[in-house]
Length: 213
Image (cartoon, rainbow, N blue to C red; front, side, top):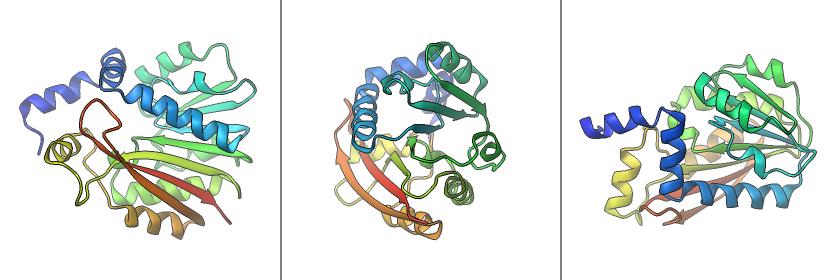
């Protein structure tokens, strides 16, 4: 359970400028940028769907001509996101990703790459199930979703464990949990765990889920 100082830190990170500064300081921005650029280059999709897009820091990493759709629950984040992406084809939806209403706004997406960067550990099991169900409806066969979330396993250091346990998202899951949920909704899954990718001790679970049917 986060202590009082950690709780204050969580409130501070709710401010867009503080969130961006913190992500830059710990090396998250650079790692996520490399992760997005690598996957965009590898899969060459026509559409990008960014779940929990925040301030849309990833949008400007995309090649020209790629359509960007960002979903988030924070009006403050989306306001900054819109200013950041004025020069590219983009659309933003204020929504809870577990709520299926956003699927009406996006419609079904062919050749789409979904991004869930540090999102799943912020939602409970029911919300995760609903989110993956929504993605299954929107993403057509051959589309993919890639994600990053903290993970704790036998090799996780005590300090990395502390950072993960005191993250704003309390729902840290084993890789097999994700494989099961995605599998129920027509996705195949591959994953890897990376360690010390940030400037703080932090273990990350990298997932690639492919819509098969």
